[in-house]
Length: 90
Image 1: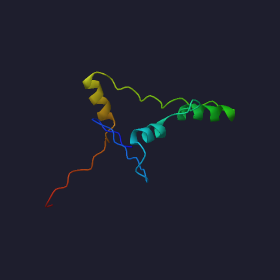
Image 2 (image 1 turned 30 degrees about the vertical axis):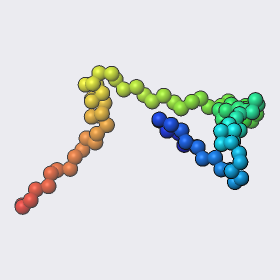
Image 3 (image 1 turned 120 degrees about the vertical axis):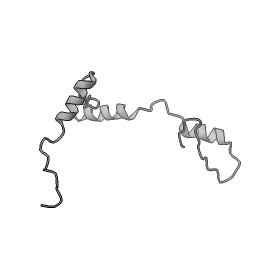
Image 4 (image 1 turned 180 degrees about the vertical axis):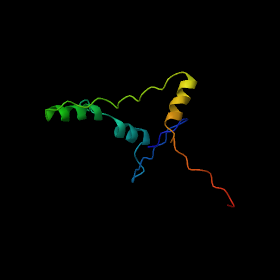
């Protein structure tokens, strides 16, 4: 199955040609009542091992909202030493 912006497409293979494609697709994507998400399974595995599951990804440091400060922060990250310019001739 592919997911698109305007529409979603799915290929349903039926060797006999007698099955209803909509019914086959519905049967393929139905979730059983005991289905769990990957996050829930991950938490269960961590807790079964006696560990605390890690939190979600750490939040990146917020840049200052002031454009001048943001530019100053970026300039601080640039290398300070620059080689002398090459000159032709002597």
